[in-house]
Length: 112
Length: 114
Image (cartoon, rainbow over all chains, first blue to last red; front, side, top):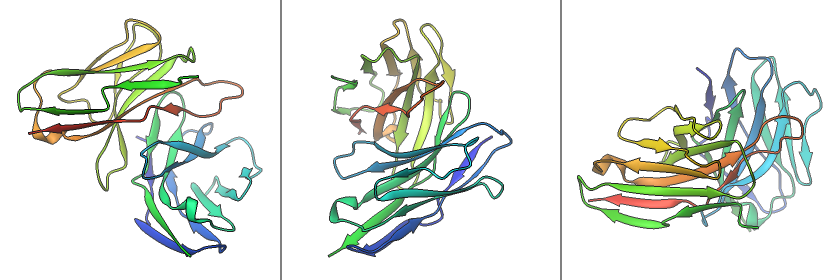
C-alpha cells in the first residue's frame, strides 16, 4: 500500500525567510500525482501545488516550489519570502489511480 | 459557485445514535471521498466512490457506511456512533485525466460523540 511520511510535526520560520517542508512516499507505481495542501485555522483545505510524476520539471506557484526527486521518492515544499499568512498545517498527499493518501502534516509557525 | 457542500457543520451525538452526513458537489466530478481528521494523524480515508452507484473502502471503513445514488451526492452514515468516531469529517471531490488540478474539499463537519 502507498504511504506518505512527513517527519517534521512542527516547523518555524521568520517572516521573509525561506523554509522547506519534507515529504517522502512509498509506491511501486510509475505514474502518479503529488500535492501539497494548506489547512489554516479555518479548517479549509487549500491546494498549494501539484506535481505530475512523469514531469521532470519541478512545479512552482509564486512563492511556493517543490523539489521532486522521483528516484528517492521525495517531494519537499519550499516557501520563499514567508508571510504571516503562511502559518498553517501543511499536508503532503499522493494519488495514483483513484485514492488520495495524506501524510500526518507539518504545522508551520511564522514569526514576525 | 458552491463547490463542495457538507451538512451539517457541527453535530453532537450520544453513543449508539445514528446519523448521516451529506456531501454535495456541483462540479460534475466522478470521484468523491470521505476522510476523517484526528490530531497527529492527518486525513485518513474512510470510503470513496469513483462514480455513481459505486463505493469502495478506504483505510478506516469500520463503523461507517456510504452511498452514492446520485453523482452529485455522497452520503456517510454512522449506524451506531461510538466516542472513537469523534472527529472532523471532510468530503472531497475530484476528476482525473488530462488537466487534472486536484481535489476540492468541503469545509468539514465536527462530530462529537458523548
